[in-house]
Amino acid sequence: MTLDVERLRTRIGALLAEHGIPSAAVGVLRGGRVTEFAVGVKNVETGEPATPDTAYQIGSMTKTWTALAFLQLVDEGAVDLDEPVRTYLPGFTVADAAASAVITPRHLLDHTNGIEEAYGDPGEGDDVLERMVENIADAPQVFPPGRTHGYSAALGYAILARILEVHDGKCWDDVVRDRLFDPLGLTRTTSRHDRVDPTRAATGHLIRSPEEGPVVTPVDHLPRAFGPGGNVTSTVREVLAMAHVLLHGGVAPNGKRVLSAEGVREMTHSRVPVPDPHMFGPEWALGLIVCDWHGRTAYASDGSTIGQNARLRLLPDSDTAVTVLTNGGPREGFQRKAFTAILADLGEVTVPDLPAPDPAPHLDLSRYEGVYERPGARYEVAAEGGELTLTLSLDPVQAAFLGRPDRVRHRLLPVTETHFLVPPTHPLEDTQTAALYDFTDGRARYLHTNSRVHPRRG
Image (cartoon, rainbow, N blue to C red; front, side):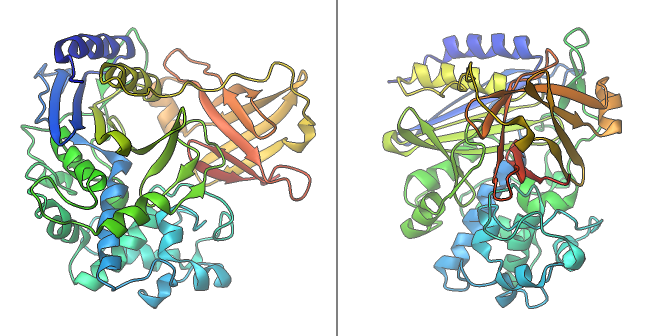
């Protein structure tokens, strides 16, 4: 089945208007053939239209690129996923001596390492990853290695990239260019914001109110510390070139072998459970999220920067990949509707809805109450009027810019004894999900939401 591009263009345009997003670029890879189109503008201040060649920041989708590069090292016999990191970085150490000795590349790839993102200010130089690894000597453990899944925004993949730097004898940006971008023949993809062609780049936007509409983000790129975990900029066609590698056993669209078939299998089949399975997927693989769509397995790679968002979905059993790149707005509500429209047009299974809450839960609320916290994020769970509430403390600078209070209280609607819906309190928010789990001492030890884990502190 082929796409009705004009119908989809109209539908995506309506969704952009509904959600206050300036533009979206859409790409579909099916049976080796790419279909692409764009709707909207690159920048609301200039009104310049977006095109399929517009380059968007893909945020944490970068981690899939980094995982591919690291699995190349495995192919080469240079590293073993289950050897301690200090085998390859002898100076690697964190505050917990036991964790220092046992953390492996697999722990980093699937986000089960548990190291707090306490790497200080490593600067913007070519030595940024080396400095990050040096700076974590006092970094505490959020949880023991392998205990649970807890997303690492920057640090985990920075350590992986540092292993690549040491092996290849060059900085990360040159490693990923030489190992992936150039062999795939990519000319619009880079890990450095200062190497992006400004005439082709989308500008990020935030939205403070529906009345005001999208405004240009005050932070136009992430720090270089996020390089291996979040700094790639690309186009829909070049994102789909990476998807082609994963769908075709490691072979790029130009016929070059990028990774062995066994390496791709390792990336997709080495999995850990995700405590909150409903927002993204029930399992995390190596650089990929594993989704269950009505009994069919799909793989996801998602990313966001401060004003841009990227989504990629892979359906291996029908040789299909879909990517949607945007330069602003709320994330999940738009993306869910956009993917549903595209997949339905392809005659594919669509994204499952979030579960319904249990109308008659029987919970001992005292088991959930407490403060769940790590640097930069604090959640308070309390029992009020026979139900649970979740109060989030926002960063004051972010709250002021967005015109929001710095403390926001949500209801927690139980789906099961451990899984909850978090309804929105603002028209620009989407419903979120959360898990409160691990009752080994009688009370929940962890809160898991937006893939991040927060230990109970009190």
